[in-house]
Amino acid sequence: MSRAAGESTDGEPERRPTPMSRATVPRVLRWRVVGVGIAYVLAIGLVYGGLIAVWDSPARGWALVAASVAAIEWGFCWRLLARNRHPESGRLFRTLGPANALTLFRGGCVALAAGFLVVPMPEGWVRWVPAGLCALAGLADYGDGLVARYSGHETELGAALDVEFDGIATLVAAALCVRYGQVFAPYLAVGFARYAFVIGRVWRRWRGKRVGELPPSRVRRYLYVAQFTFSSVVLTPVVAPPLGVPAALVGGAFVLGFARDWLSVTGRLDHPGGVDRADRFDRG
Image: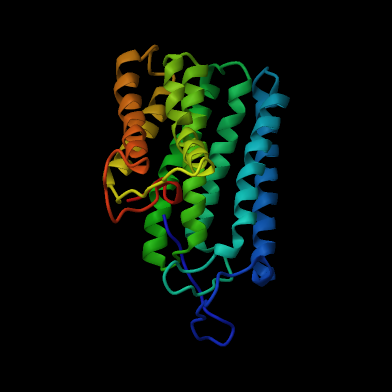
């Protein structure tokens, strides 16, 4: 997902001869991101209050994990604010825009779902909550790209947040599926695939070895959508565990996609003119 750009204070497009530094981030933009953090805190507080009211479980652990994941996501946004500009023209944008707001909403849903990793599997209608949160995150992931394109609010910030939130969402959803016994433990490889890829790339660079680039591919996007949709459906109480064969097919295809990309960046597959996958995990 890419995002929107804005204009300079005189109404003319502002070109960037050099990358924007943190010092030049508009104050109003910083305050809006502070507002996002406050919204995360309020959401966690409201859901926490609801859980202790209707569910007899150690909800304090839920709140701690949800707050930790939300803090990580918020930290990504704060650190990357200097990239709130159009990817081609470099025009600055003083607000987050609707697409970035939708992406941050997705991050909030993932953080709330992550809290269920450390509490007993809920029963009754509460069992639908983590599945519903993952489903909302998936819908927001689909919508933020459309909103970015149709609103004209495409930014490097949005693309970067998309990458990070995709990785977190994949890990949380896969871990929940294993935690609830819906799939077998090897399915966790889906959640750790991207992080293993990134660590491997850093390791190769540290050793002075070649790290190549990848061509754009719609297959990567389809594999991501397939595995996240599968994880969200599996979390619903209407699906009887364990789903060994479907999980092996969906998860295996996803992991094999990363394996193929690893062969490409290490030079075992030659794909000239590509785009670095670590810079764009979820490309269309």
